[in-house]
Image 1 (cartoon, rainbow, N blue to C red):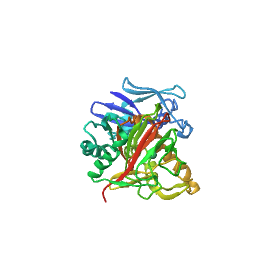
Image 2: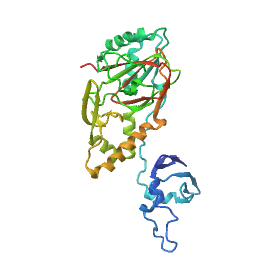
Image 3: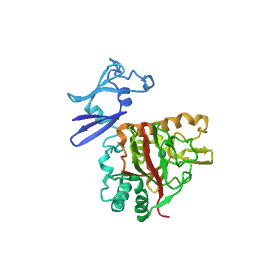
Image 4: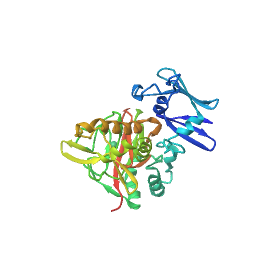
Length: 349
Ligand SMILES: [Fe+2]
């Protein structure tokens, strides 16, 4: 038998069965907090710290032994007692959002038209695909990428940036300059254009020129993160899907807003709309605000957990396509004349 430690619970694993227990539940049921004569519980769960952490957990001598971080106490739970009180026996664990970059990488040496089919299949499966390609002048290939994707049925979506957006610090394409994409600053995970009723379905990011330092891309699978959250905290997941918030973008010559929940579950698929820099101040009933922040922040902390990230560098020649309604993207700060091209696409109408 063995013990698996998770963020707020642990799993006791035997060869043919398993059971999950929250750390709070375990500490609330600690064998030390019993009256020596009557055996009655002497602790109220409200007396425990809000955050509990385990320094060590193991199966010893027919019992689960847990050592707690905050006070160093060792608690013992006989396995027969755990079996009798198991409230989550044989629980099916939902996997964490995946981080394996190799699972989204494709060889693009045969060129955009040849790889486009595999690219779209991988995006449908994984939410993103990164085509590795070396080519002498990547900027002359953007139209070939567009033609390859249009040839597979995608429709280019023009935006307030124009048809092709050049993401570079000297900003040659965007008349509305007050935007993080045109700086060398880090941008945390977000989805693009949440202030539109229907944000563009896909973004193509094509590497044109490398940064001298930094500029790494991060992707997180919002659908997987939401399913993982729902398996840990159903109330938070329900609240995220049931609470509309306002996204608002106002620039010199552009203004849009939309009121929509951060997560929408449609036809069994999860759509995410998340942008810390365009979400408007929340207006919720006073008595709902605390629960809202708790749910929202738990979701975003799962998304921002580096264990749940695809992290890589888009090199010159490479092309990344991701599903903007499923994946969140971000980048690290950089130095130098990094240049990435962005093009949005929708599914065929
Ligand atoms: Fe973006």
